[in-house]
Length: 231
Image 1 (cartoon, rainbow, N blue to C red):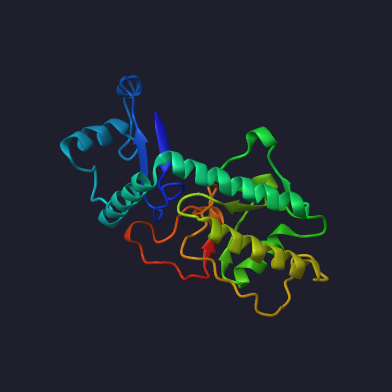
Image 2: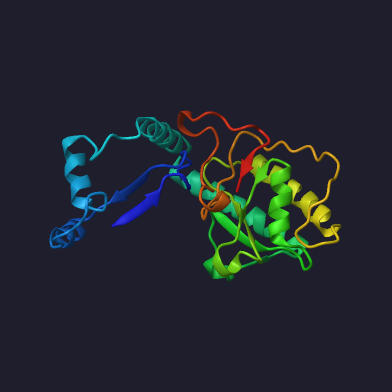
C-alpha cells in the first residue's frame, strides 16, 4: 500500500491523507481481528466503494483535491516532476556557491525539499527566526539535525520566481544573522522588499514542523499574503 499527505507535492491545505490498498494488503488486513475504527483500512475501502466516507468528510478539502488534480493534469506529470527537479538543482547551485552543505549525501537527496547546513558561524534557528520576521516561513531541521539545519521546500505550486525570491531573502538573512553578536539573537535591519509571488513554498518535511506543504492558492483555499512563503 502507499499513503500520501496531500499538503505536500499535491499542494492542498493540510487535512487529508490518500492511500492505495492492494488486494494483498487487504487480505492481510482482513486477518487482523481488532483493526480499530480510524485505522481500519477495509472500512475506508468498503465505504469508498459505496461512494462515501467513513465519517463526515472535510468537503472543502475534497473540492481542493479536485481543483489540484485538475491543475496537475493540465501541467502534466512529467512537466511537474521536471519543474521540481529544476528547482532542486537551482537550490543546490545556490547553496554550493555560498558554502551551504546538504545534510544528506548526494545520492539520497530529495527533489522536493532541501535540508541544508548554513555557513560556519550562522545559527540555523536564528536564520529561521530572521526569515519569519520578514514574513517567510522556513522549516528548521528535525531531531538531531534541528540545531544544525534548515529546510527549503520546492514542490507543489512553487515556481522559479518564488524560489528566487526566497533565496534572495535567505542571502539577506544570512548577512543579518552573521552581524549579530549573540547566537540566536536577531537584530533589526532595513526593509528587504520581500515579495514571493503567489505560491507557498512547501516543505516535504514541512514548514513549521508540519506543513511545509501546501502550495499556492491551492484548490480554492484563500490566497496567502504575497510576502508569506512556506518552505
